[in-house]
Length: 353
Ligand code: TXA
Ligand code: MG
Image (cartoon, rainbow, N blue to C red; front, side, top):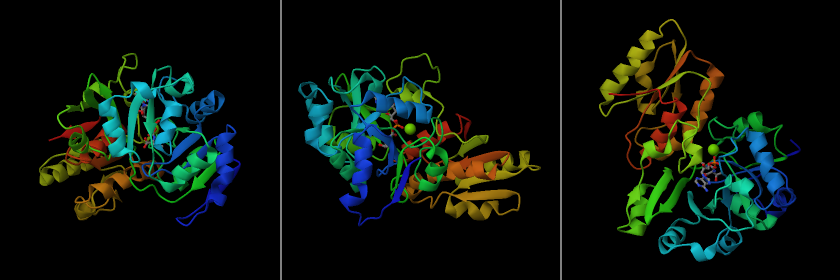
């Protein structure tokens, strides 16, 4: 890595102009967004885009999201005349925000960005650093999450630094990511809005905007484990967010049952080190020397939980237990996105009782 800067909320353009020039000139820059950190390059530069796939060890068929800073930029990345009324409604409602819309690509976006698809994922971040970086570099930024492929997305600079410092040219440190899980990815297919990856913008949020247009989310459709099957969202078929440690996710609507089940698993591993990732309110149930407890935050605050999820998963590998047991949440609202990430993190090793 060549350069690292730390900035705070009062940053000036002068502090990030150097990083913006790095982007413009085809280099790889880690930068903050409101969801997770991105590892970005000039979206018009195919050679720079290839560097991202190399740095992350990313499968070639997994397309990148292109980040823009204002709606005028849409014409430089998409085929504007093909954007439908429903798509405009979504753009007007959720740009800027933690929302990615799959749109028809134009000729300026190289196929390296879209993994040979005719569509491109577009997002306009609200994070002011991301926004200024795009403006100052004068180009859209193609960026996946800042992590080695398959690992939890980067939300804390300390983790990103260790993982990517030798693979990127520049790191902009702006503190922990606010939301903590990646954007909602949506695509309009035959007039229906399909959620390819759930995120902070929920099905209900989308329904309020598109009215009677059916919004679909079917986890099974998009998480096909068979690598040869065509899936709408290529990124969802791969092993993802997974610590190296063996993990199991436990959920029951009945909390007592959930806690008892976790104790059963702890007992199975009673001669080993065990780690539990759970809610603040449940820490007291697992107070023994044999259990390391990683606090996800209050069970009443799903936004706090989503913010802490990836950092918690990374902590597990630092503690190196024989097993990590994770408490689940109800699949409702943003709980759907939390469970979507957790189920992948535990490689589908999921007990629901
Ligand atoms: O919040 C986010 O979305 C972060 C920040 C950095 O913006 N980015 C992110 O990128 O999570 P990544 O590459 O980790 O995930 C992008 C997801 C993948 O599942 C990918 O398959 C899907 O979006 N995707 C991208 N372009 C697509 C396309 N044209 N069609 C279908 N899915 C697409
Ligand atoms: Mg990712």
